[in-house]
Image (cartoon, rainbow, N blue to C red):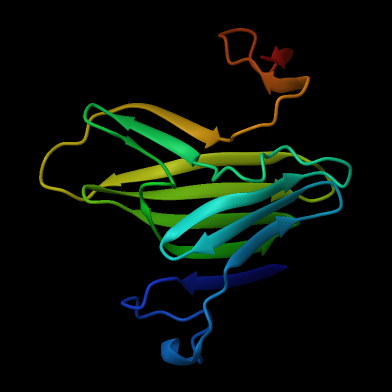
Amino acid sequence: LRKRASFAYTEDEKTAPFPSAKAESVTKPTRFQLANAQLNLEYQAAQDRLHLSRFSTPAASWLIASAASPLFRVYTADAVYDATNLAFRAFDLTIEDGIQHGIAHFHGASLTVEHHSLLYENTALTEHWQVVRATGTAPLHITRIDSLSLDLPAAPLDLLHFTSDWGQEFQPVRAPLT
């Protein structure tokens, strides 16, 4: 089973959420959600910006409510880009085989960024990555990408991840966040 919804957030975009809809008659959504019984990721759009407004389980939220989450960070030789300084343009959501795949599209003067988020059915497991494209005339030298960047409340939290060391791939690691 595959479901798909797409929404262009700017007036100059020619697309609408559904082929039969006219762009001028469509109300822009301000919230986009990937959710299941274990985890809720809710994005909120305001003007040409997008931030993560909810990242929570039914028992607890992991975000500082008053902070605008940068979502990701792309470091270049000249600047740092994230959702707070790139223009939000569109959000696509596909649901296939129980996996929710959201793609937020951002534009800057010399690059575009697709922020991908996956939420797996019946789990609190998420996966995030970016696709960065140079759109300017000069080369773009990327020095680092943070696939998920959040402002977390001061609380005892553990980070669970897997190693990628050669010969020990996918070994679970638990580390306290300080």
